[in-house]
Length: 177
Image (cartoon, rainbow, N blue to C red; front, side, top):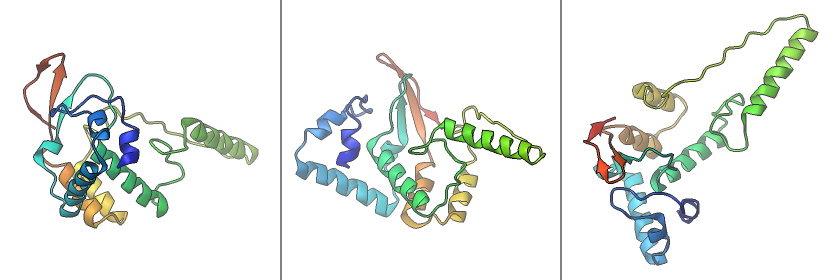
């Protein structure tokens, strides 16, 4: 948890107005209580309704503490079990678009050397998260062997999501995601 807090120094607070700086300045015993709460949420799979409500400010913000911890756990599991294709570069540590460009270039050169053809399709999905088929995601997670606490958390996290948009001191009405 401390690693996550250390990387979240300049982020806007949530609806409760508690900043990462405030949490970071609490004594270790209080941080342990927060971690115990996060672990209880993780083990029970019961995510508080308040954690599933977002206040959207029209500027890019990093994820919140619990979501970042879950992301690290899921990424570790997927990487450790070789469940992500080598051709998947987006949103992966130590990978970049250039890696895929070089791989494509090598494929084209090899095909040319061997008098073969190469086909390529490039996709840029607009609003990929908003239009994601959530039931399909859960089926894919099961197929990848994601189960137990991780599966339960992701399934619960994607149910009954709400958000509001804040511009200055004005807050929009509640919307379902």
